[in-house]
Length: 177
Image (tube, rainbow, N blue to C red; front, side, top):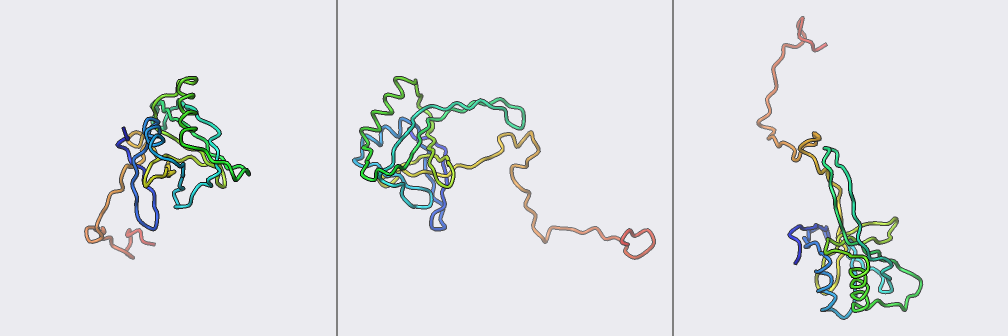
């Protein structure tokens, strides 16, 4: 089942929303396609000769700025491009690697996070659309905005509603000089 959470990518100056995938979603899609294609958020493709060098589960145990202890689990995939341009990873082979990771490592059905080498190692969400997988952007956020003082939304005020206190200026005690 796809999570109800959405990830947003900006492509051609339009907002595109994708459902974030869990491992079970990925396995289902791998069973229904003949070729693995991954697209980056900017619309370009990951080279067809990529390798999946790691499949695992990552657990993050941390405390947020408001003092709340949190745990997050993701299923992590690492994509890597080598010099062997004739290499092609078939969907069935990736499905076999995933099944092995579930059996040997106890990987759970969690949200997927993909690591991919750009100018540095970047982390992406994963979605599926138009017969290919889309690496989706991830963003940081304050998890405790209600307790750390970070406003959740800026107050909007119309300029016409602004009032200025009238002060006597340039008179003794006017505090303008």
